[in-house]
Length: 305
Image (cartoon, rainbow, N blue to C red):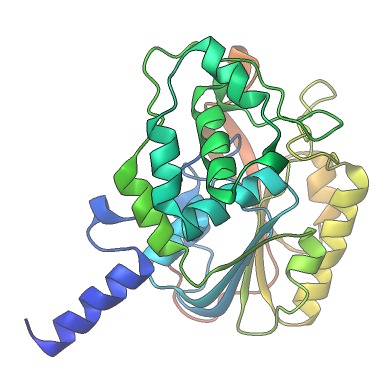
């Protein structure tokens, strides 16, 4: 094999990308996951950056797409949801331990509530990660919801044969996460070191489209109006620091008011995860960014070099 090809293959193994079927994919189902919006998001992100920050990691669709393209030198992933962060850390640091535990978990209601009732503080990192993956794949409608004590409280789902364990993808995810900083952090703290040449993507809990549609309890402390205002102020701070930041949120009057001084674009996406079946389907979402692109976007660039 030529030296240049060997170098590419080593980079692919290190970054977790190769042929389309070999790329790491989100290993968790996530309400508001960005798989549907990926083309629109990638079209508005620079082709390359020094450090990529994602303070609301969720299902990680954008991160995995960027990792597949070798789009960053470093990455910082964060979230306020400690259970979610543990899932990423467990897969990164002990993927085989996570796989072994998932392989022993049976899909039935009794097992579900037994695993749900376990105290994460009594479990190893790999066991905590396996627990969250299992609950996520088998709970009602793939929701992630916690009560005021921070305990997962979604009921058992009625899936016939959910795919609880995907060994190959978990191993690809583990490779993609190598060398990535992953931590529990508030969004403002997570990007405190961002500077010109870096890229930030914000995918916060969305501003509710109506009084009855609010769903922000994916962490112990709900993400409410004050946090939305604080996030808008942070976008202005990043713009002033010449940091390229992209944000997605609900396309509603409140959001447009918060970000009226930025470039806004409405895009359509399908939503399959909602507690009410009649509210699944195509919805309008808003993309907001701080600076004009200086050079080609990820979507317009060629495949990984």
